[in-house]
Length: 230
Image 1 (cartoon, rainbow, N blue to C red):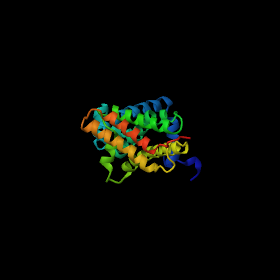
Image 2 (image 1 turned 180 degrees about the horizontal axis):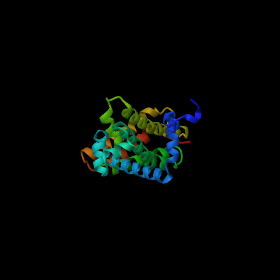
Image 3 (image 1 turned 90 degrees about the vertical axis):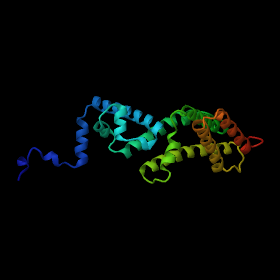
């Protein structure tokens, strides 16, 4: 059989990647932009749902109802419940960085930057009292459930802890914290303050929890601070 006699539908047998690339080129930028907007709107609704009901409360059906879309419409953007949960975790982490991390790194290295990281974290907790922190609620939901969702959540938390530990070590390098400071121990204590704040303010509704968290941080700083900063 010669090339001239090949059937017109030969392109149906293209390798999947080549076919996908060819299809993508035929999609107009306007359609792509609309698809991105729809996905962003779905993700916004999913984030609100997860904040109030936890990651386990997320499902294609529940999200379709909240977003006022069909299940097939939601499924087209998130092919599975697991993919949806991981996308929510990533979006939560992105917003956490925007509100907590990036403003703080504009502060000078050392205690000023570390203090800004903690203060921004406290403010973030304070606005989540009526919804919830996905880092904390997710840890309860997935602490003993291995899998991609747990891995994604743990990876984001580890990234945040690494940023805090780096800030502590920079403060040590600046001579503002004692050279024998155990950075991991200090990080543990700072994280403990946030967990206690979330518990007392959200669960017990105990007044003054924000101030107690800030006083706890100041005491932690005083414990590790050098008497004569360089």
